[in-house]
Image (cartoon, rainbow, N blue to C red; front, side):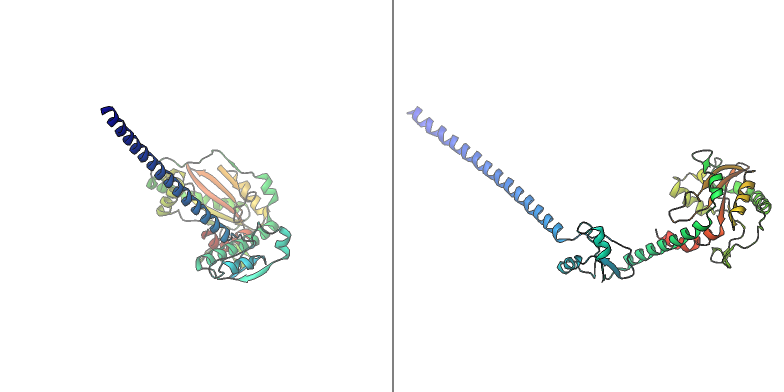
Length: 321
């Protein structure tokens, strides 16, 4: 009897354990099914969102409140792209290059103030750059470009070691000699150092109230500006500041440019950047020399009047970028 009573007890325990395990398995499967369903719904929502949100790219520069679009975009606009708040343009994946040229229309849209300002600055930069390149092409000093290649005596130029106060005082001490040397160079090249630089009868302005002259020796770079530049560009290393003492020489033609370059050969030139060969991204080109005077590195820029005359036009747009 005891044996008969024990056996059913074991069977009930086993059944309870089996039932509990089966229930846990069902709950685990249900959690998994819920996870899978959630993933499926999220994936479908994301896919639907991507399908319902057209992606556009610009085909041409935007002018004020107008953009150029393909006719097929009109339908997309009516489906969900509100032209008051977006800038629809060509669907590049949907059309060919021929269609871009042949099937275009203009749709008026409203741009927010930031976007409009950025587009206007980009247009201004592009327009000024094109004018500068067109004028530079007429006067590029080809002989100079080939005779005076860019070089540097060292991959990195350094001023004498010391803090900014020491370096600034050293630059100040050699400033009169720097001015004297450059005055001699410009005079020997047949230029009047004090003559105001002009282009098409207009003074070429260095600042709003100060024109360039054939020789313009700038004031020393201020200590505040030195600190700012060292921190932003050289990790605070003031010995990398090689333009605290600087000057500009403006010439009218290539012969004058080569005459100045020949006279500069008498100085200790540490580096030459011939940016007539490799213009800046703005299109501006000149020649940048670094010379050493009593251990201090100075900067001398050689400009051609036709090119430097457009520098002030492009500078405001350059600042915005």
